Length: 144
Image (cartoon, rainbow, N blue to C red; front, side, top):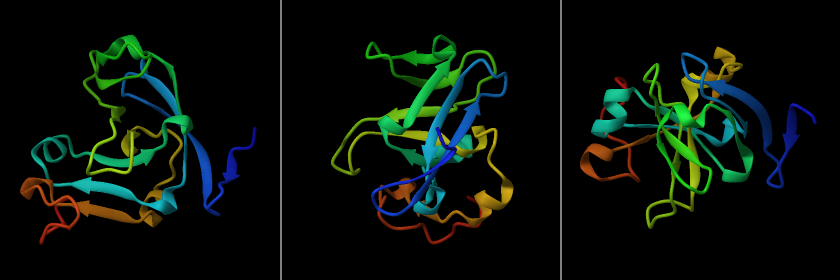
């Protein structure tokens, strides 16, 4: 399989490999960084310094270590932080009225083969979770 594919919308997806800090939890995901990444100022994202990218469930593959994650769902998907190193490599987000369907939120810092130049080039969408105004950026984003 090619490391880079073109999707139906003309975007270019690349397969990235990721892991937590202790490498017990491993995954791979097909991601088009040109579609954007996200940063939020809600308490959870702020304290974790969460910078994420949305991945469709079919483009995400857990490669091992799911039992090391702090929560487990019986449908073979898991998420949460690694019980050993404390890093949250990814989490599953269910469909809700505020999103466009279920997705996997991947922690960009956990992508082992992400080049800094590719990350700098990726657009960032800022969300004002602190004010429950998810569709508008907060007035200040430099700290995110």
